[in-house]
Image 1 (cartoon, rainbow, N blue to C red):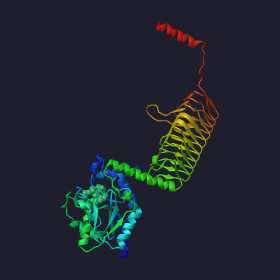
Image 2: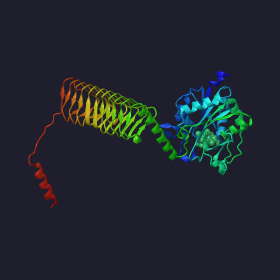
Image 3: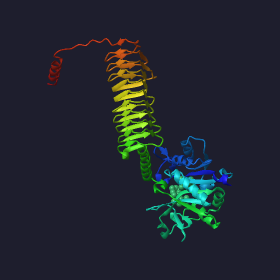
Image 4: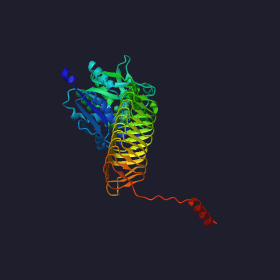
Length: 468
Ligand code: UD1
Ligand code: CA
């Protein structure tokens, strides 16, 4: 008996369409913090280390399944959305042999917290309740089911707003839509739930009344911060939720020793990591699996996706970094674009209007101005002059450029790949390099430079005569 109580199963309801989102996507696939709503719920639920997790899908079932890569959940299809009670009942055979308690969550309530779920399970077990409801007291309870209590404060029922009397609608305590129920009781009670209500649906909260009818106990836990239990039904609520999540994540990073100059315009996705004493300026977006080291400085207007940055890196104003890496002491920007596959070793400088792609650049090398480095490797301590272009594409295929250590590439150079420059090569300014250059050599293009004195004056005169 005691052993069974340690077991916990999770059911996440995600079959609804979310009509008010006015969307081609099922509601739970809308994202906050870069992640679909239901995956926030799943992530939090997993912190309880449940033995079994079932997700009820219906609208856009395939897309919802695909949005989660893992294979550690059971997908249950609810063909017709006949209500939350019906949705839970559709998991009956998946939990027939399950001895523990079941935690039921909504896929559209993404900010629910682990400690809230834990306190629900603890209360449920302590009170040996048939079902434990999460409730919240709201200034504006409209839209939610209301909690009815008797004179002693014991729960009598949860009544949906559409079925409530005017008096009941004034009740501010609402059903937050998260439940813990004892498995056997749950499915037996759901079999008895009827749909004789204003919406013609099978309501999950009706199991409370059924429990009471059997003389069983119904427990409640009141949520600490009502933001946690907010559901999303409209795009406006989605935006508000995005903001709440952002505030929570930003606070967490500030608590961990990161300075955010303007938290209101700092967007850090769930899954990003940042080292202490890093300073982040306004309009910064850190996305995907980005990792930022310690003591980094991000001046602002930075978009960083799936990029790993070492300690003491400086991102100057306005940079875009995609799927790249930069080691300790690198300096990037302003106005630089690192495209996928860029890897900068320690102390590399990438300056204004420099674009890199699949570029592996060695320690201390600098490319400070107006340059495209694509499909190339560059050794250490080389200098790439302003206006250097790796011509990596001939319209059919991509080719590689290889540049050695301590190479000086003069300004306005085009390197026509495939091409290799050995160590210590000098490229004269304005060269087009089409052939490999051995170590230590100078490469330049023969070109005659001529000066015609007085040419401008003559030209102007000629143009004037013409227009007469
Ligand atoms: C529900 C509660 C309400 C509570 C509110 C809290 C019921 C009847 N009402 O209302 O008391 O205050 O949550 O947020 O439970 N779903 C399915 N299949 C269905 C119907 C719904 O999977 O047939 C899913 C939805 O996708 C959603 C969740 O269940 O993720 C909740 O359904 P929703 O229709 O949003 O219920 P509410 O009207 O918000
Ligand atoms: Ca809802």
